[in-house]
Amino acid sequence: MRIHVTYTGGTIGMIDSPSGLVPGADLHGWLDRILEGTQLGKGNVTITDLNPLIDSSNATPDNWQAIIDDLWLNHDDADAFVVLHGTDTMSYSSAALSYALTEFGKPVVLTGSQLPLGMVETDATANVTGALNATLYHRADGVTLFFGHHLFAGNRVTKNSSWAFEGFSSPATGPLARTGAPWRWYPVERSGCGWVNPQPYSRHDVVVLDMVPGITAERLEHILTPRPEAVLLRAYGVGNVPSDEPGLTDVIKVAIDDGVPVIVSSQCQQSEVLLGHYETGDAIAKAGAVGSGDMTLEAAYAKIIFLLSQGLRGKELAQWICKPIAGELTPAYKGKE
Ligand code: ASP
Image 1: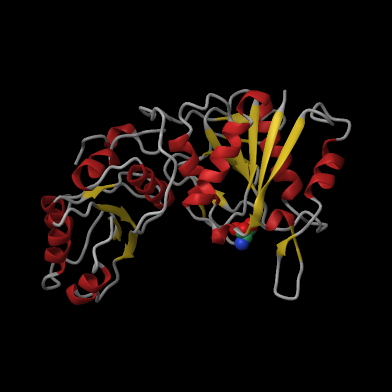
Image 2: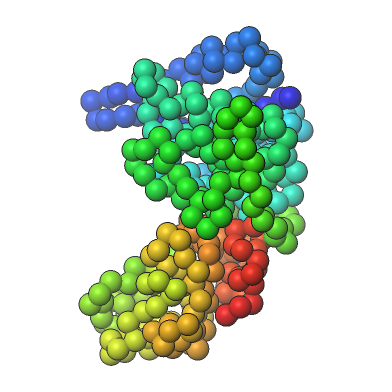
């Protein structure tokens, strides 16, 4: 088994500096020492350091594309791929990769750590060996994310703790596997229609917006002026917005009429966005807003950027939200709204 590692940055390879943690640890030497004497010892693992190594809080869709480019560059020289990534936006990147790599045909596992590799109690060793080991099982298809003894579908996962070693979860589906001797694997539906020859990721103007008690139509109008290319509206529960607030739903309707797709997700980590279930979600559904089903915020955001990068706009883009491309939502939601 030959594995290619794409190292993007993140806490895993950071060292202390006067201004806080920055990239700079000897990740290559550390990995060599861990793998020495194992079936992945010298020669079977290659590494690319992306330039520059970043804190993933600085990631943009351009960084997603840089990872994708490195994976394709090394596609023929490895059987499986591991991406070392900062934890802060790792679930955005893993979702983004899942849409763009439906034709890749080889497993890609992202991982990172809460503590740098140089610390005695670091989780870097368990996470990196876990990600490598996931590929050895030959069951980790597509894009996945390994963290805290669990393997997750890359577009079903969210960072739910800034400090816990089990810092990620899959609220809608649960994990694909958990470590042990041997690992336990769980059935998770991951079908999607795929995407042939996707255009590269590019940056787009997408507003991600939370509903809060007391939000006014005027404030919302200001946020949506000038018009963004799309809106991801984080509503309450199953997709409810304040319907009694004068003019609020009208602002959303006018934005949609202006050609802005409005995608409604939920502030609940575990959600089933069903617009029209309550009167408070009905008005925006009638105006043309679409629910994001049980997608995570990260999967929905990355999907919007993916669709915009493919040149889709307005209603055409909105229609793709309920269609699984890479298993990012439960198929039962397809066309339900
Ligand atoms: N800020 C870091 C990053 O996302 C956090 C981490 O890696 O855990 O790059």
